[in-house]
Image (cartoon, rainbow, N blue to C red; front, side, top):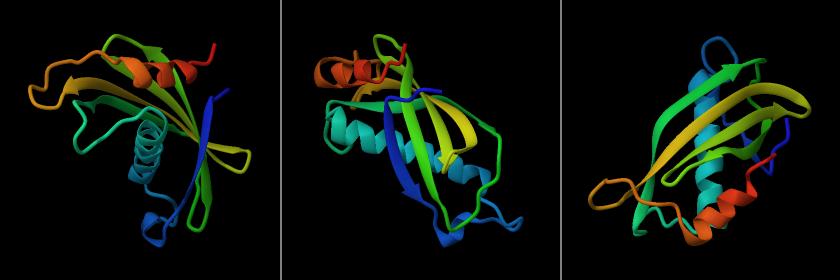
Length: 134
C-alpha cells in the first residue's frame, strides 16, 4: 500500500501484555499519535486553543502480525476520504518491511465551543489533500 506520510514510533516496556506481544490498544495509540502529531506539525492544528477540533467517530484495526518491545514501528498515513467536515485516515503499521496492522480513523471536525460540525478549510484542507493517494 502507498502512504503519503511516514513516521516512526518506538515501543515502550509497558506496551507488552501478559502474552508477550504489543497489546491491541497500543496499535490504536500509535495510529492516534501519528495522526495528531501530523495534524499539529503539518496541518496547523492547535489542540488547546484552535477554533475547531477533530473528534474520532469511528476506528478499526486489522492485525496481521505480532510485534513486541523493543521495536520501532513505522506508521504510514494517507487520507482515504476527505469530506466537508470529516476525514478518514488510513494507516499501516510495519516493523521493518513486515506488515503488522492496517487501520482507519475517521475524524469529524467540530467547533470547539458548540461541538457542531465545522468545515475543514485553509491550511488544514490543503495539508489533507496532500495525503490523498490515488
